[in-house]
Image (cartoon, rainbow, N blue to C red; front, side, top):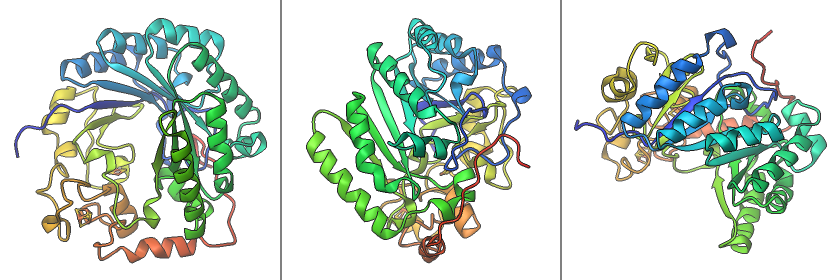
Length: 362
Ligand code: SF4
Ligand code: FES
């Protein structure tokens, strides 16, 4: 295999701490303890290496990245290194003072998540009373600062009938881009799948609303729409291909090809405390094992889409079919495709309660 091109993006999960408890969170069930998190200097070293190896953008994520007080210093270093900087946040900690610090640091973009369009429902799903109101204030601050705003709405059974209201909210807030994303079933979301997975009828309802909104808002607001794999005939190109476009770093410094990779057995994920980003990207087993097409089984091996979707998602192949090296069961050509429909059927009524995300499990 020829040497890979540099990664396009670095996803930094600064911390697993978060004031919210969303049941659809894709963070792992076993989260990193605060005391294990990389220090400011360690993150700064990572950001310097990122620029050196040609990475273009850095996404500060979590948990809630604003729970780290050093976020402005990290944004400033990334900006000084010429990296495009994005924060993926719940917004509940985005006060006037925090906004001013981030602006001074050179932040380029903020993606703000909303749990619903109705405050009481949003606060219930996020497990935080008053969160929705704080998010509205955060959106106002972002727009007043002149920054581009992406409003992110994660869709599932508990909020799906209000997707039209969510789009109206995004419009009212002046978002330049909206992300209407069906839940991706990893980590806590996989644990809560039966309480979250929509039916085919609910999916068709959302599809119709999104198509109409896209036509109406064409040229004004871009709407990215992420469909649920469980109702798909073809898998998504997860992470743009394994070890192909992104490096994801966990709060404690493990370099991962995707945010859910720690669920895969038989891997030792390298730490940025011990190895350089360059060595991790170019030659670690973790990043090379499923890179490209050589690893692929049938039916991917002979398929004309193998360099389009890269065989789908390794973590989903493990979670649904029991083996990360198989074709993603979201693909209609996979011999395991029927398992997706069976999961949808298992998520039929009555809808169970969901388990709120929390740092420590009981
Ligand atoms: Fe993609 Fe493999 Fe399905 Fe082909 S067989 S569409 S490469 S997942
Ligand atoms: Fe891990 Fe898709 S989430 S490869």
